[in-house]
Image (cartoon, rainbow, N blue to C red):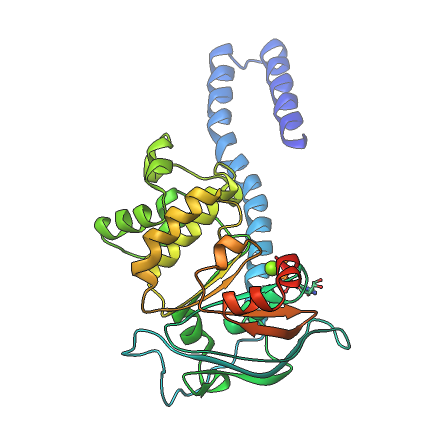
Amino acid sequence: MVFLLGYEVFRAVSILAVAYSDLSVGLMLAVFSYLWVMVTPIQDIINFQYVLATAKSACKRIEAIYAMEQEPLVHEKYNPFVGKASVAIKIQNLSFAYQKDKAILRNVSLTIEAGKKVAIVGASGSGKTTLSHLLVGFYPLDSGEILYDDIVHTDLNLSTIRENIHLILQHPKLFNDTMLFNLTLGKDYSEAKVQEALHIAQLDEVIQGLDLGFDTMLGKDGIKLSGGQRQRVAIARMILSDPKVVIFDESTSALDVHTEVRLFDALADFLADKTVITIAHRLSTIQSASFIYVLDAGKVVDSGSPSELLSKDASYFASMI
Ligand SMILES: Nc1ncnc2c1ncn2[C@@H]1O[C@H](COP(=O)(O)OP(=O)(O)OP(=O)(O)O)[C@@H](O)[C@H]1O
Ligand SMILES: [Mg+2]
């Protein structure tokens, strides 16, 4: 305002100077045009203040991230994931609470042999997702331990665990970026590999339906895709990262039964040698598991093969899922 008012006052004075003194009209116009040339850099200097203020607040946020406590780094003596198709997972007396005195998991113990397909079932809120988060080290345990091929979790870096154990979240996170970025997360994969992953994840038709194919922007949280398509993107991501252990946390809950069957048929070869943990409510999703653990209120209350559990207590088991 002050700047523009000043400019107008200057013009008024110049006009008066032309009227009452010997300033010529030509000179006045020349001064106006030179003044206009000067305005732009002055406005740039004024705008710089805003840029500086934004940069300062951005720096503050970055500083806050750097000031955060870092995840512990340990000296790994032995990496159980190297040179093997998969690993066994053993959970011993694991207890965990998000808030003190409100235990979510109580004394959970279970064993999953390498390469086996295991399912975890239980009512909503029984702690299944929490258990899967603990397996990939999202939270520190309150007590107990997790052994990956007899190596205790505290002897491994969290990055090692996360590189080799892929958790497909109940609600996959997608970025406001292209389809390709959302699949590869910025890593380099050959086109053949990406196509293969898409094919297994039943996404070929979805890609063909997008306006710009791989270059389509998916919008915030992948808003342009349906829930089931987002879940399949998360599965394609897992196929590309080729982990040793895969945890499906309700990862196909939004798919219709036919697509789900096709997906798991296509995945069968890929998962053949890997340890797989499936968390699901739908009986169809877990029927192929070789062993099932039943979780209730944070405790393992039952376990056995699908046929054993169904014959033992069919009504109870059916009501759980
Ligand atoms: N981040 C969190 N902070 C505090 N409490 C949480 C948090 N996440 C989950 N909980 C609580 O932990 C309990 C178990 O939640 P969890 O997500 O593990 O259940 P779930 O068995 O996966 O259920 P669902 O079948 O509905 O997915 C719930 O009572 C929930 O309120
Ligand atoms: Mg859950």
